[in-house]
Amino acid sequence: MKTLSPEDLRRLRLRTVKKPPKRLVAPKESQGLGDTIAKVIHVGTLGIVKPCGGCRKRQRNLNERYPYKNRGQKRTAKST
Image (cartoon, rainbow, N blue to C red; front, side):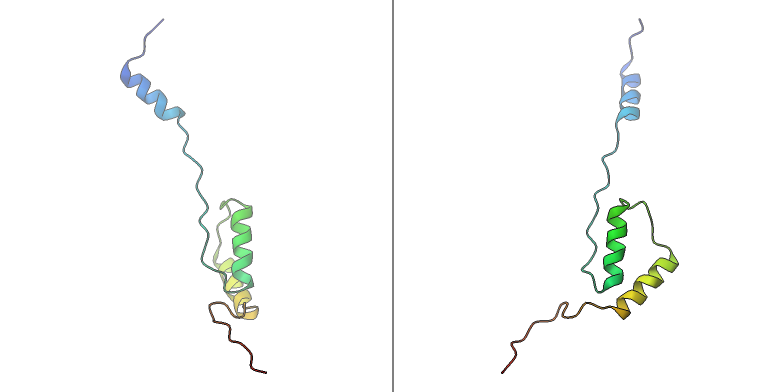
């Protein structure tokens, strides 16, 4: 039986060590429906599906058409 040299052991360890999975970073706060859909697709596919130019255009259009109201704005008490 052959004994492995320290260099051989190091090479074997490098081959067998798997990288930890990427952590999904929460994107910025959603500005509208397009951002929310993009987040759901990103999390649902574990980041495998990358947005293309058409995806970004649809995201921008959905954000403009269906924005979330009162995001980042302070609520004021209504005077009656």
